[in-house]
Amino acid sequence: MRIYLLVTQHEDVCSGDPVQCFVMSWVFWVNRGDASISLNFLKDASMKKYFYIKVRGVRARSGALLYEVTEYDKIGYIDVVEFMRRPNDAIAGLAAAGMTFVGKRRAKLIDVLSDIEDFVDEAVFDRIGWNGSYFVYLDGHIFAPKGAPPAQVICELKPERVGQAESLEGWLAGVPARVAGHYVCEFMFMAAFAAPLRSLLNRDENSGFEIPGEAACAKSTLLNLVSSICGGFLGGDQGKYPLSFATTAAGIEWETQNYSDLPLIVDDGTLYELGASPRARANSLMQLLMSLGKGEEKRRYGTTSRKFKFVFLTSANQSLLQIIGGQNAAEVVEAVSHRLSTIPLFGREFGVFDRLPDGYVDIGDFIADLINAASANHGWSMRHFLQQLVEKVALDPVAFRDRLESHIASFREQANIELNGGAARRVGDSFGLVYAAGRLAKHFGALPETFDPLASTLACYSLHRASVAPTPSPAMLLKALAEDNEIIDLDKVGRRHMSDEQFAIVQVLLPPKGRTVPHGLNVR
Image 1 (cartoon, helix red, strand yellow):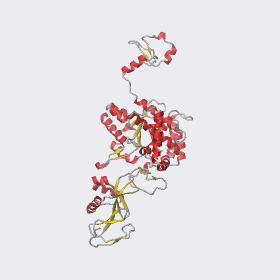
Image 2 (cartoon, rainbow, N blue to C red):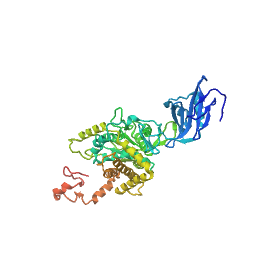
Image 3 (cartoon, helix red, strand yellow):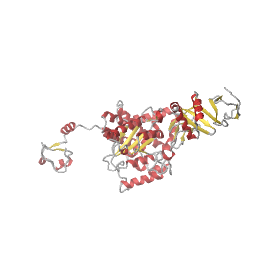
Image 4 (cartoon, rainbow, N blue to C red):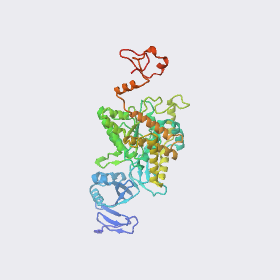
């Protein structure tokens, strides 16, 4: 302990410890038994006023190392990695906590922080999503197991994105119960609940699902309905949960920190970099989707990137994979497709819906009722799910993970996915996790009992598999037609030898060279 010339007296500077400090030194170390606390008395330019600050090293629940800086009743945190790379910029961030360090004050604070070697574990949360056994929501609400000690959230929050209205019961009856039996809708609702489960499994990469289809097939409406699970719905001051592709790749990557362990919903991929050349647009989109698959956020000032787990949901008039495929090799498209699965809606009469529900004249009336119900009731289901999830995981994390894995394995078996399929298994497991999430959400009461997780997941997996089936070459197509017993060759069978029944059931006619085919028939 170093004590210099007596200048002034400070009592009770050690949070109740019976210590009196008479100091003029920049740093005075007091050992309280649990950790070393640095008590700093920094004087201003007039040499007449002293500022009391306290600094210490803490380890957040995420594992991140932080410097905690206290000035009277103000507390701020500095990321150690950012401090090591750019100390001045890192310290400038304390302004958000009402603390300003400039000139000699800043220089001395840098010296003090650089000397800290010990870091104590604290219930400090520096990120949205899972922090140990706790879960931090976008508005700062902490979901914790019963009996867990209090904790402090220090990350940036986005409360305006997760508004709440009315009740869980009203939402269940008015929104998901009405789309039960519409398999694409069921699947996308269940996918939202898969997001908090990803961090509980031994899998590194994120998964995404796109629903491309014609304009006005209710793709964006479905994504907005899904966002009502978390609290966002169709704008307003509250509830701006979904993001838009009408931004930059850097903007979307920066937003990943706000959706850690939650569904990342980005609407309308058609808008992405419309002003760029096809080649530049395709390459930028490819890099963005690969980055989202890895879950890496590119941090400012070249600091080390963080990783986030989430499920990525999007829509577009054209498949994002097709945009990439138009300018890249098949191997590139295949690599991206392992991270983004396509569930195509093209050619479906009712778009995202399987049928026109009873009691409605057209699908527009049905959509209007869904929108009204979600506007009046939203923001409850995910909260209800998370509170039960943290309780269940806290009881036995390993058993809970094993249960999830067993449901995923069950889906693989039902879908006949090869265990040694590599990439195919990875994609199948992404669908399997949605199946497991749907089962759990039903069990927790976050989705209605009328949902059928297995049927809807199998249906969407079949749509996906059909979308990635290789297109046969013209030669292979002709060969297959020639070998098909149901194909009628007009060189061998004239019209007079064909019955009306044959014409009624025939799918394709191959006309002989130089001849015509009766009007109204499909010709190849």
